[in-house]
Image (cartoon, rainbow, N blue to C red; front, top):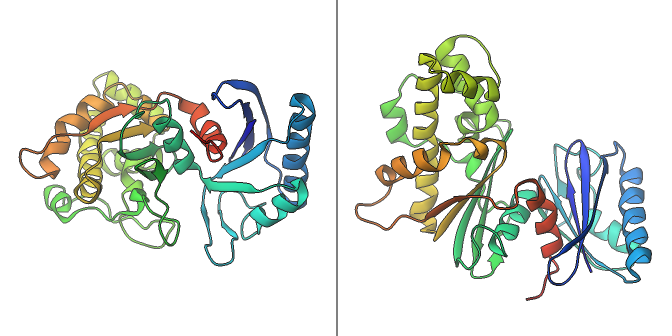
Length: 301
């Protein structure tokens, strides 16, 4: 059996899959605030599944952050209980088996490349548009993590100079990473709000902005237009490096009904002339993708 955990700031999702990737069981629990409780909760859920299915299941866990490649500790600001902790070692000891951990955006993309929207593609760029912007790269059957575990972090690309030339009035924002004008400050859900506040001089959340857009509000239409230009420019930079077969969008903003159409229309401006565009799709598995991808960390075709 394949066990998948998707760890978030507020909840932990858990699912059990068989070797044919059929989901047999799902559960979730609030994310604890202390490390000891975290270890106990994961251990108990795994042990209960072992008993239920009379098997010693293989465990994969996705989380929002990166693994320090030297110390094997976690850089995970959104889940304080496991930040800086040697989770791989401690869970392996507690559960008496090997544990696989991976960034949640990587898990999302892995799921989409095995039976999902990008199934059969050799090179895929995954983009999650939520509170922040996550990115992941899939090449020839595997997720590319990189030396420092941040391959695919397109949310921290700086805005291209060509875009700043087109929109010199864009606000100069500071990212939580400490850098200026990172892509996610403008194309995440938070970023959409940043753009609206800049142009409308008042604050609204993402869903409210999209409702105003649908109602024909002039400022909201301007904000959405700028949003898609920034998104296409940022991902165009990644495509000039990766030249992917497919781009898969996930996260809350991927549900915006005009996303694929508008992005596809604007992307060629940021690529070389006459190149073939990648397949541009939304995720098949949605909210299940993270936990399914975590289970896939142990999948053998």
